[in-house]
Image (cartoon, rainbow, N blue to C red):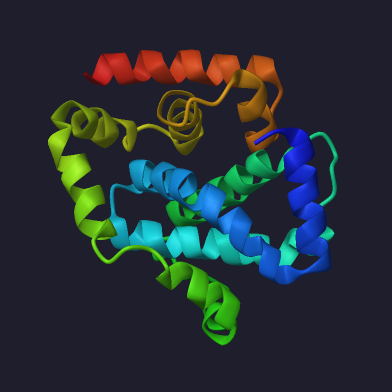
Length: 187
């Protein structure tokens, strides 16, 4: 999606909250995949994805273009939710009650196919190498996990990663380099 298309979509969301369904349709699968690859837990990933989209839905009215696109903004919210999970011993989505009270958001979440869980779990099991890397990746500090996941699992550019993580490009490159070295040593 081009930046102009993203701007148009955000403007539509500002005027009509129901337009957020298009945001959800476009970015749910990539963000859920990002979260699933970071956690390796389907149910937890669903919770974090739901929280991510609920927060985006509630805050889209205040979203303004300040050097970060809609996609990067959504990944930033997801990354913050993941960080919150890794910092706490038990992740409890703060907005779950709001989600249950908001029929538009609940409808969006239930539109996913019934067999989504089986498909995602089958794909994870089919990739033993991926699982080995993911398990070792989880042993790294969160700062290394995020940059490696965004770069190699989500195919984000250094610039996009800087926007998502609110870090300069040099720092991102350094974190990737150090993280990969630590991961190589583990394998």
